[in-house]
Image 1 (tube, helix red, strand yellow):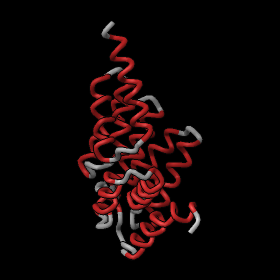
Image 2: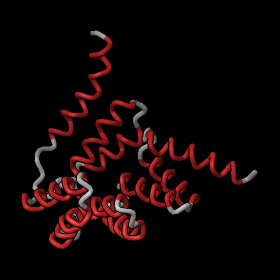
Image 3: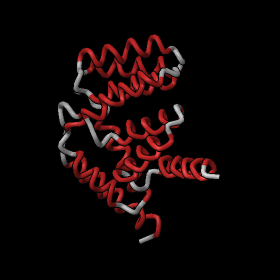
Image 4: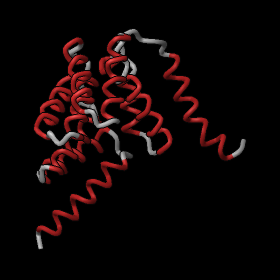
Length: 189
């Protein structure tokens, strides 16, 4: 077997295992496939498997189970890309109103608030995400980034360490921790 095929085998096996679980009408943060994925994410030392697992988790988190909600999420994403934050806020707020237990609606609005510079609203929405899905490494990373922007360095460090406890191979969290360590070392001088 060639080297590339040997490296690909664990990824294919993981993908087939997850597909065997079958479709779930309402996926989101309550999906029964998530515990195994989080275990894999925490335990793997293979960066390719970690990235594939992360992708699968994001896919599940994004499944609202309702076409109208999916359309609102897409409209919010497109508005955010255009930096039309008022339209993005309206879309994500409509998602939250319709499905208040859908963590990804809160997470996308938190991201939009961060991008628009409204850090306190971003933090409030991140709190909602983490109430619904305490393992949401994206929201926890967002918590770290917002705290960095607010110069709450220790809180940022705690958030990125929390990300790494869930997802040890998360490169952005590792890089942000390096920046924080450097900043803390400089402040000790």
